[in-house]
Length: 92
Image (tube, rainbow, N blue to C red; front, side):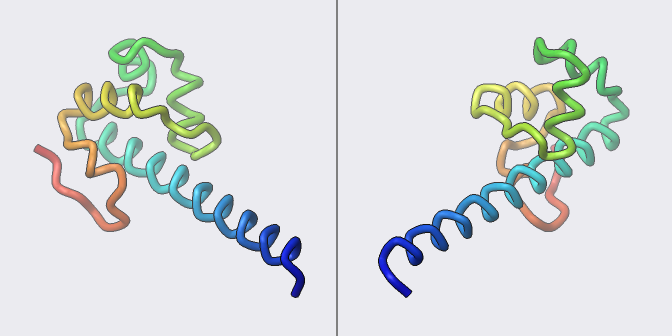
């Protein structure tokens, strides 16, 4: 494998890992939202975005910015670390 092929393969692996992380964070947003009995529309209103954006976050279609993640954690009353744990995390 030449240098270009190796670099391209590493880039693809990195992008796949980031995609998996976006999906994991999205699933955790949905879990926290359901546990807290908050609708997508209500959560969107709390953090200042559309319910469609919440849907995109939950499906991992759009990555969540750090500032939005902070607002989501605050609105859902959980630690931001919760969103990055692959297993069930603790809610406050």
